[in-house]
Image (cartoon, rainbow, N blue to C red; front, top):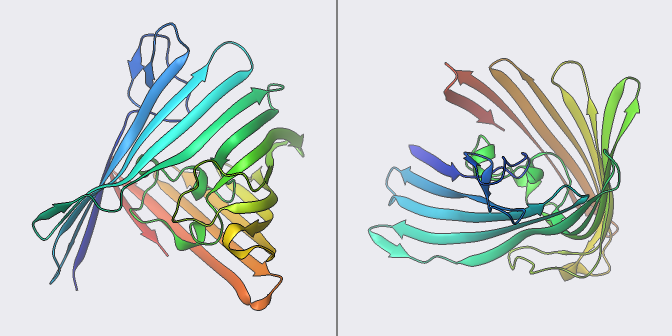
Length: 282
């Protein structure tokens, strides 16, 4: 069987970059609303799937809108709405698919110090690397690794503290978070936290390499009374045209070993002439 999966993404904002000056626009930084402190941005994802002996499908899988606010003070606000499964085209027919307007993120940040930040609201669960940067324009594969999707809720509603500490000549980044039974517009396809407490640590290594560790103890809504513990490790390395990333998780339950889950993925990337990309994910 011959299969071709092509994904196109159009981005007008990056939630991790600082926006430009008021009234200006730069691709990848969003559009500043003059005099308000607000910035608009977003991205769209289109998937084309053509396989031998199967009808071709075209799907507008994501239409995401970012809205964030900041000024010269210590408070910041960020939100992300994501219209999922906007449009499907299969075998010559259009359909609306299983549309859903997801609230991916909605939180306030308070910068207590230049390195210490306190976050309240709904945010992406800080487990590994992929879950924090899974937007289509920022990743190299068209499908998400299963170990980053089905082993834990991808969003948490609660509080998170992040800080950077100098240790052995390195800046160690860490996040500590907690989530309760209050969920802001949970995705119907996901089983949200009812209780969760965890953390994530990022350790810089030699050159452009990073090593991360995750841990969370949690309970989910559909399985109240079952306590789960998840341990994770992640790795990232880049040099010139090459990049390697990997994540592994092990999750066990107080119900016994038959409820345990484990998994790993490894992905390599090689840029050709600075434009073309070849990748391999396991």
